[in-house]
Length: 186
Image 1 (cartoon, rainbow, N blue to C red):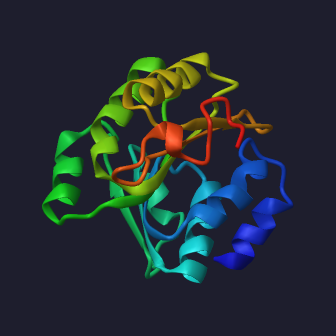
Image 2: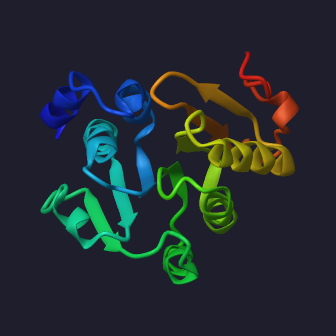
Protein backbone atom coordinates (compact mmCIF):
# COMPACT_ATOMS: atom_id res chain seq x y z
CA UNK A 1 0.00 0.00 0.00
CA UNK A 2 2.96 2.31 0.56
CA UNK A 3 3.61 2.40 -3.19
CA UNK A 4 -0.02 3.37 -3.87
CA UNK A 5 0.26 6.06 -1.18
CA UNK A 6 3.40 7.41 -2.91
CA UNK A 7 1.54 7.51 -6.23
CA UNK A 8 -1.30 9.49 -4.66
CA UNK A 9 1.20 11.99 -3.24
CA UNK A 10 2.28 12.78 -6.81
CA UNK A 11 -1.24 12.84 -8.29
CA UNK A 12 -3.38 15.97 -7.92
CA UNK A 13 -6.51 15.38 -5.87
CA UNK A 14 -8.74 17.24 -3.44
CA UNK A 15 -6.91 15.69 -0.46
CA UNK A 16 -3.39 15.27 -1.86
CA UNK A 17 -1.64 17.74 0.46
CA UNK A 18 -3.20 16.15 3.58
CA UNK A 19 -1.98 12.64 2.82
CA UNK A 20 1.31 13.00 4.77
CA UNK A 21 -0.67 14.18 7.82
CA UNK A 22 -3.03 11.19 7.57
CA UNK A 23 -0.08 8.83 7.05
CA UNK A 24 1.68 10.17 10.15
CA UNK A 25 -1.43 9.93 12.35
CA UNK A 26 -2.48 6.46 11.15
CA UNK A 27 -1.66 4.00 13.90
CA UNK A 28 -3.71 1.82 16.19
CA UNK A 29 -7.41 1.84 15.44
CA UNK A 30 -8.27 4.11 12.51
CA UNK A 31 -11.82 4.77 11.34
CA UNK A 32 -12.47 6.36 7.96
CA UNK A 33 -15.97 7.66 7.26
CA UNK A 34 -16.20 8.03 3.49
CA UNK A 35 -13.98 5.98 1.21
CA UNK A 36 -14.78 7.00 -2.38
CA UNK A 37 -11.77 6.16 -4.59
CA UNK A 38 -9.49 5.19 -1.72
CA UNK A 39 -6.94 8.00 -1.88
CA UNK A 40 -7.08 8.66 1.87
CA UNK A 41 -7.50 4.93 2.49
CA UNK A 42 -4.11 4.31 0.86
CA UNK A 43 -2.44 6.87 3.16
CA UNK A 44 -4.12 5.42 6.23
CA UNK A 45 -3.21 1.85 5.32
CA UNK A 46 0.39 2.81 4.54
CA UNK A 47 0.51 4.42 7.98
CA UNK A 48 -0.78 1.36 9.85
CA UNK A 49 1.53 -0.87 7.82
CA UNK A 50 4.45 1.14 9.25
CA UNK A 51 3.11 1.90 12.73
CA UNK A 52 0.72 -0.99 13.39
CA UNK A 53 -3.04 -1.06 13.55
CA UNK A 54 -6.21 -1.56 11.58
CA UNK A 55 -8.22 0.71 9.30
CA UNK A 56 -12.00 0.41 9.30
CA UNK A 57 -13.76 2.19 6.43
CA UNK A 58 -17.48 2.90 6.21
CA UNK A 59 -19.16 4.06 3.02
CA UNK A 60 -22.66 3.78 1.57
CA UNK A 61 -21.30 2.83 -1.85
CA UNK A 62 -20.76 -0.95 -2.12
CA UNK A 63 -18.16 -0.41 -4.88
CA UNK A 64 -15.81 1.00 -2.22
CA UNK A 65 -15.32 -2.56 -0.94
CA UNK A 66 -12.82 -3.04 -3.78
CA UNK A 67 -10.57 -0.10 -2.81
CA UNK A 68 -8.21 -2.27 -0.72
CA UNK A 69 -9.87 -5.65 -1.03
CA UNK A 70 -7.85 -8.38 0.63
CA UNK A 71 -5.60 -6.06 2.63
CA UNK A 72 -5.02 -7.76 5.98
CA UNK A 73 -5.25 -4.51 7.95
CA UNK A 74 -8.44 -3.21 6.33
CA UNK A 75 -12.07 -3.82 7.18
CA UNK A 76 -14.76 -2.32 4.96
CA UNK A 77 -18.38 -1.92 5.99
CA UNK A 78 -21.05 -0.78 3.61
CA UNK A 79 -23.39 1.41 5.56
CA UNK A 80 -24.42 4.84 6.73
CA UNK A 81 -21.81 6.54 8.89
CA UNK A 82 -24.65 7.76 11.12
CA UNK A 83 -25.90 4.24 11.91
CA UNK A 84 -25.86 3.75 15.68
CA UNK A 85 -25.58 -0.03 15.20
CA UNK A 86 -22.07 0.42 13.76
CA UNK A 87 -20.94 2.44 16.76
CA UNK A 88 -22.55 -0.06 19.11
CA UNK A 89 -20.58 -2.93 17.50
CA UNK A 90 -17.27 -1.16 18.04
CA UNK A 91 -18.24 -0.18 21.58
CA UNK A 92 -19.26 -3.77 22.37
CA UNK A 93 -15.80 -4.93 21.27
CA UNK A 94 -14.30 -2.13 23.43
CA UNK A 95 -12.54 -0.65 20.41
CA UNK A 96 -11.21 2.84 20.97
CA UNK A 97 -10.36 4.95 17.96
CA UNK A 98 -6.95 6.58 17.67
CA UNK A 99 -7.77 8.44 14.45
CA UNK A 100 -11.17 9.27 12.98
CA UNK A 101 -11.29 10.72 9.47
CA UNK A 102 -14.61 12.26 8.45
CA UNK A 103 -14.96 12.88 4.70
CA UNK A 104 -18.56 12.03 3.79
CA UNK A 105 -21.60 14.09 2.78
CA UNK A 106 -20.21 17.54 3.76
CA UNK A 107 -23.43 18.94 5.19
CA UNK A 108 -23.59 20.51 8.64
CA UNK A 109 -26.29 18.18 9.96
CA UNK A 110 -24.58 15.02 8.67
CA UNK A 111 -21.17 16.03 10.02
CA UNK A 112 -22.69 17.07 13.34
CA UNK A 113 -24.44 13.69 13.64
CA UNK A 114 -21.22 11.80 12.81
CA UNK A 115 -19.30 13.72 15.47
CA UNK A 116 -22.02 13.14 18.06
CA UNK A 117 -22.07 9.43 17.30
CA UNK A 118 -18.38 8.59 16.96
CA UNK A 119 -16.59 10.94 19.37
CA UNK A 120 -17.42 8.71 22.33
CA UNK A 121 -15.04 6.07 20.93
CA UNK A 122 -12.07 8.42 20.50
CA UNK A 123 -9.23 7.33 22.79
CA UNK A 124 -7.81 10.05 25.06
CA UNK A 125 -5.03 11.63 23.01
CA UNK A 126 -6.79 10.50 19.81
CA UNK A 127 -7.45 12.70 16.80
CA UNK A 128 -10.41 13.60 14.60
CA UNK A 129 -9.59 14.87 11.09
CA UNK A 130 -12.35 16.44 9.01
CA UNK A 131 -11.77 17.15 5.34
CA UNK A 132 -13.28 19.96 3.25
CA UNK A 133 -13.59 22.59 5.98
CA UNK A 134 -12.83 25.39 3.52
CA UNK A 135 -15.00 24.13 0.66
CA UNK A 136 -18.07 23.32 2.74
CA UNK A 137 -18.82 25.89 5.48
CA UNK A 138 -21.15 23.42 7.22
CA UNK A 139 -18.25 21.05 7.87
CA UNK A 140 -16.16 23.86 9.36
CA UNK A 141 -19.08 25.03 11.50
CA UNK A 142 -19.74 21.50 12.79
CA UNK A 143 -16.04 21.10 13.65
CA UNK A 144 -15.85 24.46 15.44
CA UNK A 145 -19.07 23.94 17.41
CA UNK A 146 -18.08 20.41 18.40
CA UNK A 147 -14.59 21.43 19.55
CA UNK A 148 -15.95 24.39 21.51
CA UNK A 149 -18.66 22.27 23.18
CA UNK A 150 -16.18 19.53 24.12
CA UNK A 151 -13.34 21.90 25.04
CA UNK A 152 -11.04 20.00 22.68
CA UNK A 153 -8.34 21.91 20.77
CA UNK A 154 -8.82 22.40 17.05
CA UNK A 155 -6.57 23.63 14.28
CA UNK A 156 -7.24 24.13 10.58
CA UNK A 157 -4.75 22.99 7.95
CA UNK A 158 -4.66 24.30 4.36
CA UNK A 159 -4.68 23.76 1.30
CA UNK A 160 -6.66 21.02 -0.49
CA UNK A 161 -10.07 22.22 0.66
CA UNK A 162 -8.96 22.41 4.30
CA UNK A 163 -8.68 19.92 7.13
CA UNK A 164 -9.78 20.36 10.73
CA UNK A 165 -7.66 18.52 13.26
CA UNK A 166 -9.33 18.04 16.65
CA UNK A 167 -7.48 16.33 19.47
CA UNK A 168 -9.13 14.69 22.45
CA UNK A 169 -7.09 15.72 25.48
CA UNK A 170 -5.51 13.04 27.62
CA UNK A 171 -7.54 12.25 30.73
CA UNK A 172 -6.97 14.90 33.36
CA UNK A 173 -5.59 17.45 30.88
CA UNK A 174 -7.75 20.40 29.94
CA UNK A 175 -7.73 21.86 26.45
CA UNK A 176 -5.97 24.91 27.90
CA UNK A 177 -3.16 22.64 29.12
CA UNK A 178 -2.77 21.08 25.68
CA UNK A 179 0.04 21.93 23.31
CA UNK A 180 -2.46 23.25 20.76
CA UNK A 181 -4.38 26.48 21.24
CA UNK A 182 -7.86 26.96 19.79
CA UNK A 183 -6.46 29.14 17.01
CA UNK A 184 -4.00 26.43 15.94
CA UNK A 185 -0.91 28.03 17.42
CA UNK A 186 1.41 26.26 19.84
